[in-house]
Every structure is written in structure tokens, then in C-alpha cells.
Length: 281
Image: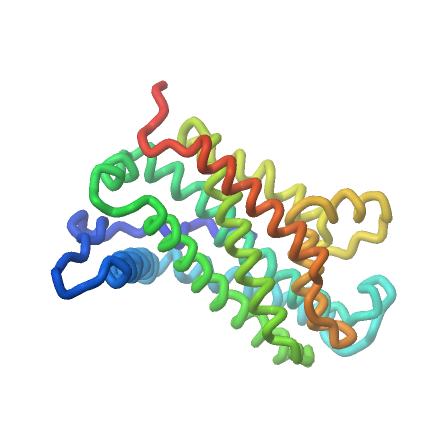
């Protein structure tokens, strides 16, 4: 379900690729950093929206998939196979979760690997732009894309009769934490990839088994497999997204804790192993 075109790889003029440092005696350091961050987010957004193919595949693919599931599993018939939910009620949050995974983990790992190999990261590192602003800008962009993806998927689900959840704060918190954790894992994987050509294969090798054993495409009823998947990042994210759609559920603190732990692990690997310059061949 990962789009073939990246939401972060559109080309823009080189002069726009690196935000200019904010200066001026009348601005505090805090406002200067905020200006840099907003500039970086604006650049990533422009790079994304100026690539129509990336926009179409990023937003259209999850909508098409949930539309197909709605046509197949439409109706409000509750089924034991879907843990007491209807098929479309189950697939609406899980498809939304996979779209977040694709935008924040898969595509980010591939994009950073490509930018490093083409020398863009090395040139950017030589500018006054702080590294944390660059990565927070990427995270903010991925989060904005994820919000749009989730909103579109939920709109299609509502068209097929899915009752929208009451606990929107639980969904927002889950979405923010999930996006941050998957972005951290994406940067960690990018730090381990030796070249851009190997990035898609490594990303898919990790992502697809996790998606399948985590119940994203079909419910998993095997207890042992569920216990194993529950210790990995995708199933807790799925369950935390599912909870507000079922029985008036809200915050799934255990699942959010597992998700946060994986985000911390990804951040630690990224900090220790991330390279700005291409690896020697």
C-alpha cells in the first residue's frame, strides 16, 4: 500500500532547497528558529504539492483500497471474524493506519537514502540550518500528509455507514505519536541503508511482513501471533486506531507505550548511525 511516488521527492529550484537563516536584531533566537522551521516545512510542502504524481498516488491509493473494501464488506453486519465489528468498520482505521505507515516510515527512509546519495544532505549539512530543524520539518510534513490521508479514508468509511468515533482526541494523539515513531524508524532504516537502490527492498522487507501479521489486511485470530505482533510497532498502532471505532473506546495506553518505545529506539539508532554524506562504495 506504499505509493510508488514519494511525497518528498519533488524537485524544486536549488535556491529553495535550503531555508535561509533568520537574522535581525529585533528578533529573538526563539523566533529565528521558528522562522527556520516554518520555512523548512513550507519547502517540503511545496516540493510535495508540485509533484502531481506523488500527490495522486499518496492520497488516491488508500481511498481506492478502502472503497474496494467498502464495496466488498459494506453494511453494518457485525461478524465474529472482525471481532464483533462490520468489515468496513474494521478496515477504515486499519487502512488509515497503513497509509500513515507508508508516508512516515517507508517513503521517508527511501527519500533520505536518495537525498544522501545525490549529495543533497551533504550540501544541506554545510548550511547554517540546524539538523533538528530539518528533521522536525520532515516530521511536520509527514504528519500533515498523514492527517489528510486519514481524513480521506474516514470520509469514505462514513460514506459506507461507518459511525465516526467520539473520542477524536484519542485518534489525534495516536496519529501524532504513530507518525513520530514511524518517522524515527524511517530515519533509522535510512541510516542503515548503504545506497539508495537498496532502500526500497529493505523497506518492503521490513514493512510487508509487519503489516500482514499485524492484522492490517485481515484479522489475525492466532493468539501466539497476536502476542508477538503486539510487541512490534504496527499492531499497537492498528489497535490504538481501532479502539475509538469500537464500543466507545478511547486511549489505548499500553499500545501507545509500545509505539513510543519503538519511536525512542528508532531515534537512538538514527542519532548514532545517521550519515549526511554518501557511504564509500
